[in-house]
Amino acid sequence: MKESLRFILNFVFIVLLFLILFSYAMFQGGFTSWFLFYSFLPIFLYHLGLLLHSIQKWEVSRNLSKHVVRAGDSITVTVRIQRSFPFPLYYCICEEIYPDSLKRIDNRKDKYLYMNQPNKLNVDRKIKKIVFPSIRKVFEFSYRMEQIPRGEHQMQALRISTGDVFGFVKKEHIFKLPDQIVAYPNERPIHMAEQMSSFEQGSTSSYSLNLKNTNIATGIREYMPGDKFSWIDWKQTARKNEVMTKEFEQEKSTDILLILDSCNYKGSNPLEFEAAVEVTVSLMEAIRKQSTQVGLLSIGENVTQFPMHHDPRQQDFIRKHLTQIQLSGNQSFAVKLKEEMLKIGSGNIVMIITTHMDDVFRKSIQQVNGRTKRVMVIFIKSAKSISKTEHAVIQQLQFEGIGIHVLTEEQLAKNPIEVNMT
Image (cartoon, rainbow, N blue to C red):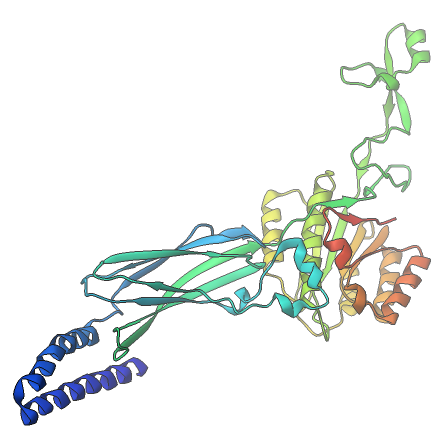
């Protein structure tokens, strides 16, 4: 309707201008008036042709250099326009219509410097390119889309407008070009000060990330290639007249459950939640590299659980879930946490990643601590935003022996992120 009205108005204006010049030449007469009329005639014919030239029939395509990226990456976008008739055009203005999900930027760890002012990362992302097609049937242009934020972004349309030199005729059309960009959460290097492991005869913790613990000897056996020199049992070697080594109790992996708080609180900081997602995906990878089974439970409006398996397909599902997840729901995380922990076994180590603490949260953590092997909390918050209530909850939980590590913008802006759960 809007395009039809624009066409009618432009057509009436051009015809009216033609009639005015023709009337002037007829009534005025003479060389000058007819010279002006015939001089305008090519312009009139061009404008009439431009009015009848349909840009809706153009074939427009968009090509992305990558459809799957990491948050903070950039991609190259190439737009190609093809038309069947080479009508001369002075200019074309091409403008991307971006979804709201792309109207912010992600500059990796530097974004956390603005944790106290997350709105500074909101941008009115605009891409407008002027192309001078002349009589070419095919023309294209490219641009860079920088600092893509986490999430699944649905690009829908491209607006193309053109017109004449004088601005008498303007044409515009929006081409539907659906494309999807998937930006996985940025995986950060994490240095964990404590390995999550235990032994058959107790819950002794190991503070070595990469070395096999050899303090508990359970027997002896014949020497095998690869055994360390320090493992040789010299007494048994002398008695049996062959080299014997000590046999140690094998370390058993402890199942670890990561719980991500994705509940939407009043005054929630979206940048703190982005940090929680990044820390979650980074912790999962760091724990998995230690050959420890790790699962994920995300609690928001909906509760999603991924069991503890080393299935590569599950890793893809977790990555996709953490790409799509956003703050949601109005119910308290602490209340839903108590409900979910009743369904989970008591032999796990639980690590909770949250951006909110209150007295209800403290009581829930105390109950969870009584049902599981160990509970640890990673609290992510801007240093200036930590309230007196949250300080009191942290001190109370630490006094009760629950490991709490606070990550502020200062720690999040470093590589690697230090996580000390002692």
